[in-house]
Image 1: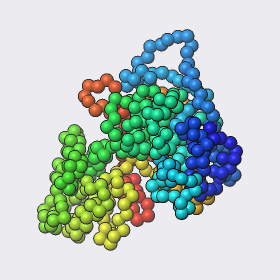
Image 2 (image 1 turned 60 degrees about the vertical axis):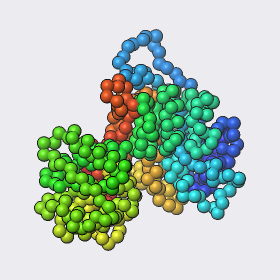
Image 3 (image 1 turned 180 degrees about the horizontal axis):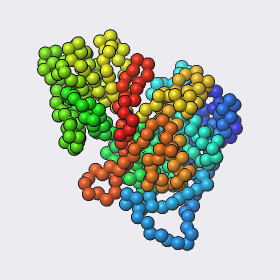
Image 4 (image 1 turned 120 degrees about the horizontal axis):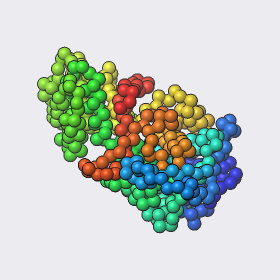
Length: 453
């Protein structure tokens, strides 16, 4: 493994391109290992030592000579085991694209990293900052970082090479097909796998060790529908959608949750199928002047979302309108003059107003080292690493029976719940974070509307 003070010092106060360059150098020197193990010495102003990186510690099971029969949580025998260690082994998977960026050299062409590299690199940086802080608190960890886009880090290859055999936790900022491949390994090896950023189950089932943090669209639809029913005494709820398979599926999710809603004052959902040919008069017939018109727009892309919002903006002088969009709207900007004064909301499993001490620490670090602001991926890397390493440290490898621990919260509330894809199944297919925030777009800062779901 490539470990030592020389490499640590290289990681101090470098541009992101420099860090990425030395990461690939580390991987080249560690070709026999199929992954680069990294440490980093923090800058002197933080006085934080690097996380410990050493050979994986073999699992030590507690056995006092007594065998007690306990009911396994969620009918998963592993969840009933108490496995605590002096140091825990963590595998981090993040898309660093080292093979693509450094195809023929360790120098970056043009001295600028491609934009597609930055999310994975920011996530990695957030993880490292969390590890620095946890190290200060005395938590002992052995961390191996895998570039999920590197050919030699294919999960099945790692599985056959026994590279993950001693792993206690996998944190992965990956999509398809890597998530499914990692899930297969996690299920086989009975390792908790935290899917940090991908808002989909990737077709996975029968894996109770999978923890999906970035909630599925179906969960967002349920949360929006329930919020609209509960937060408004009188309302006119419209679901505006294109006539496409995906948006029709989202409308079906809204309707299915409506049927399950027990609120005695619930208002019916009215479906509006719109297109570029929809006229102002056709749209106006669905609107009511004496109550809030809660318009849920199922468009996921910015162009389509703004097209229907322009049609709605024409109606604003006559009808009170509030627009509720999809989770993809979190990065959209609505600065056009026609949207001025329009109340716009979106749903998200994450919320961070960036006023707490941890956020200030991350922000100050990025300003000092990179002369830039951290992206949301950096905050997510920090938050999830802190949350789950704390779980490991306190409860051991199988913390699943009490996974929603508010004492470990950093920014967001998590509400991981078992998901059963088939009725009557004894064990969950996976766990999904069901906590969804309803957030209002603001001129400078977004505002959280609901406390918790």
